[in-house]
Image (cartoon, rainbow, N blue to C red; front, side):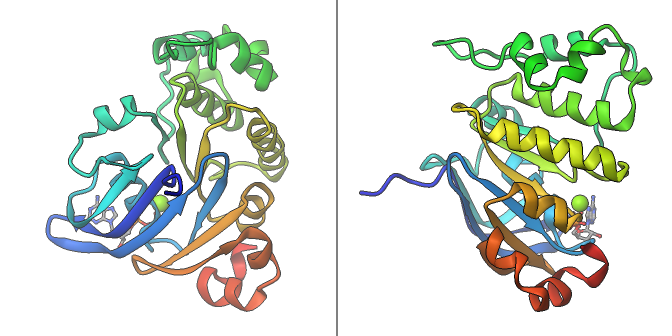
Length: 242
Ligand SMILES: Nc1ncnc2c1ncn2[C@@H]1O[C@H](COP(=O)(O)OP(=O)(O)O)[C@@H](O)[C@H]1O
Ligand SMILES: [Mg+2]
């Protein structure tokens, strides 16, 4: 039998307090890949991320990680099984230094060294430069890199990023794209599910793209294919997105 996908979501339905928001989502994320999850505001991208993490009440469907059904597990158990989350609200601690952020969350694999603080600072050199700075003294871009590094410090097999470029200047967005591409070239890089409103950024990092419209998958294809599909971009994501 073929190896199972790293993440497999099947016919997932769920919502908030009885109001359904996800209407049968199906998608897969393969090991070693970057999948962009796109769509206009309010289409269910963050809700999908919450459902993968176990933070959204589910009415039906399943979430599998490396073939294991994790639908009934809570967020902490899912995190321990290898899902790292960078939520929309960055949640940087004002009174912890950069280095402390990376050390408090760390969870090393039994074998090998994984993403040590040193390796994370090699990957994102600005964090080494700012290692003694407190959370409240970091720029938006530095905070974003810090929370990505903090998620990596748990050595996840799947990394969920919810709008990492939100509110950042274009030059910083470009830097983050370069750094994420560097990350994906590492042999032990996690698979990434990247929620984005910034289409150009997302397509410059992702291999695959899934577009949500009103809680359903409206498009699923290669990032390269979507790059050439202006019609799909305009009708499903919106002209302003590129
Ligand atoms: N905490 C919440 N309580 C109730 N409804 C919510 C909540 N969060 C999001 N929603 C609703 O769920 C839908 C999908 O939202 P969301 O998943 O945040 O979309 P996206 O991330 O694509 O912008 C929207 O209609 C939104 O208003
Ligand atoms: Mg969102």
